[in-house]
Image 1 (cartoon, rainbow, N blue to C red):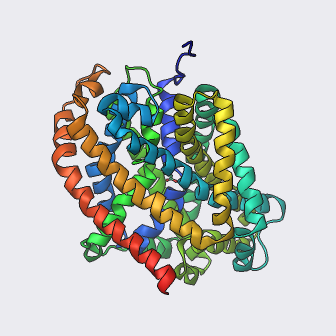
Image 2 (cartoon, rainbow, N blue to C red; image 1 turned 120 degrees about the horizontal axis):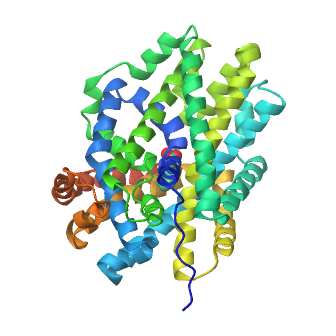
Length: 444
Ligand code: PHE
């Protein structure tokens, strides 16, 4: 068969920025700060860093070993090292990417809608009523659609021309905006109260298995792990990258932005005395509390609001691109469609699958719990078993970059003996939470 050569990243920086782009998203700017505030403040931040180091970076390296080693999309890559029996796991990854993107794009559509509003009219009126109006129904579908059109266009543009180029432009911009807003927020009167709400330390909170398992699944979601996104991105690498170093850079950048997001969000909310709105949902705080704060701020509120929602939109976009790429890469490898056709058809199907989430926020929550939590924890557990016990010599695979990394044997021991039992425990709690959520929906 006459095949086009496999696409590749244009540069090392391009790969790193694209991977950071996948990692940094709504998970950082929306989920992380609230988890921290609710679960022990600075204590949670430490626990989170600990879990990123303990299981996040090891699983990321596992995905890199498989992806760069096989240079194939998830289904084929797993079969390459483990035989046909492992194909179903790859299928689960692709299904996960499909489902996560279906609702992720709905939330991303709201950010686009808010950005538009900030630009055109500013924030006025009743933010809660506004959120109610735009978050479900026809409005939500329209902006969801627009967001998917942008995502599909970039993925159709290819690894270098679409994904890498957009990451090189957007990621530095995103970082500067978040940093700038965090510095601005520190000058506000309520900054101290905001920091206190965010970081007040309670070490007792983190010694619960529920919090431990939430910190773990948050780490997977935030680092885009457990569903083949990092695997797929690393499959477009040449051999000479230093994967352990790159994993640390990516995880570090992801954490930095999540932490900064908290330093940005809470002072803004507390400066305007709107903290009572935090009691509701985390979504509410972001899409109701902040617009309210921007409205109260007077003249500066609008530019600040524009920058804030632009940053949120950019984060969501570069993550959505990686979700779609997992699905598209698998289709290109298995059905052998050209990239543009694969991006268009799969993108349309995902958009359709998102419509129920755009009409009912409860559906969105359930799909998030199943695909965004449960699948990732299960996927990461299977990856640890695969790399630890099935794949032949993953250390050699990771050493292809040339440099000797002293801690790779330690990593291997970890991924064999420590990560699987730990993730089994986390999986138990995640299954239980999923079950309770579904029972709650029917039982009331
Ligand atoms: N990491 C992204 C975020 O934090 C979400 C994501 C999950 C992207 C899984 C790709 C794969 O928003």
